[in-house]
Image (cartoon, helix red, strand yellow):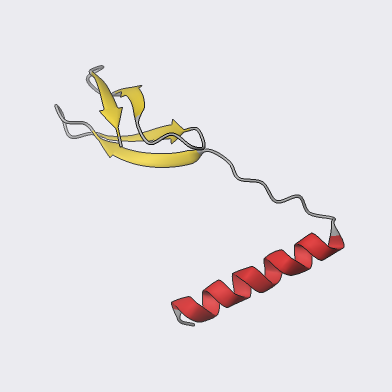
Length: 68
């Protein structure tokens, strides 16, 4: 299944869910995999909808940084 077919299938499923009204579709927070600039550790950062930069603290070394 190529990307176009998957996109069409997802759109079809969304339309069916919206017509049944049994499923509520909402947009949640974005999860960003950020790499620490000091130690190189991977960090999962949650960004609220509509923001492009999020401050976070590295889980390994504790350095405060900004994720894009």
